[in-house]
Length: 138
Image (cartoon, rainbow, N blue to C red; front, side):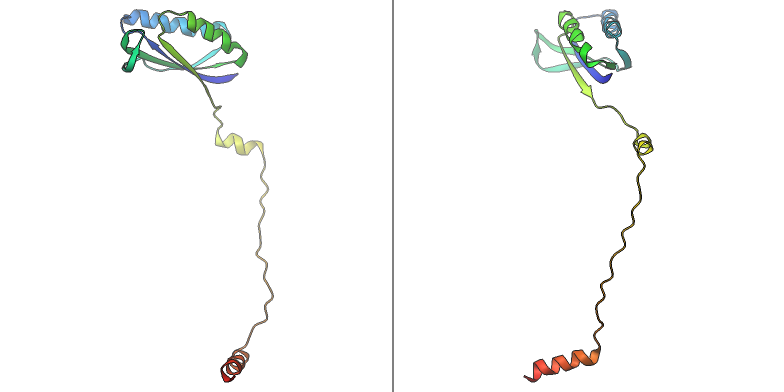
């Protein structure tokens, strides 16, 4: 099962009871095709940037659910046939992986890297002075 988020617009002329009935209908349709509801967000009234089906404002509702990918087509068909939905969008959300689960599955071997010490011969001051005298003396 994959995680999805459904966001849809409802016409502003619907009453609160009709909006709740529509939301319950959508939730029951998701559950009928084998989906599991995770979260329902609060319905908010928004003004639209442009009119959709002669409406300049709409109620915005959103919910997240889990559904097998092959059943998503059936949900699209049911949402398209619903007359009280102006527009809808279904987004696939990435699966949430907890950091503890990532590390628990694989054991990481610690590797310590020791810097190699290059054996450079130490140059004494007397040798440096001799070379400088040779260069300057010439």
